[in-house]
Image 1: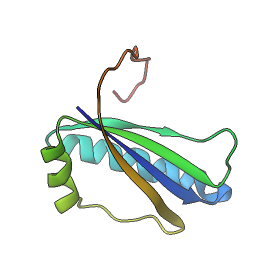
Image 2: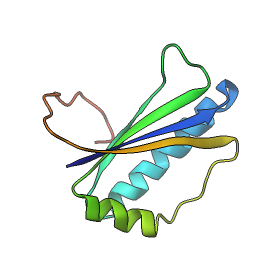
Image 3: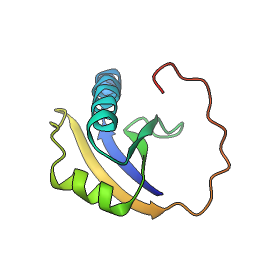
Image 4: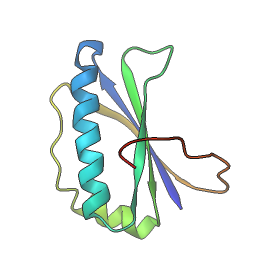
Length: 101
């Protein structure tokens, strides 16, 4: 498994627009790109200028295939500030109830 952390700079007044864009984009990616296992969007409690998403992919090859042809558009006023890729070593989280899973 691969986890990717994306950090965007988004003005607080655009955060709800960004969340809607991210939600729809994540559903589209999960449905159209093999190996895309979804993503979680987070808002740091001590930073009103950023949002963070943690995406999960089956493999680095699947992630690289997505990056070669993401088929998505950027949201105005959202600036990607950081991307980090991690190999998942262990995961002890319990999936919570979510309507869109």
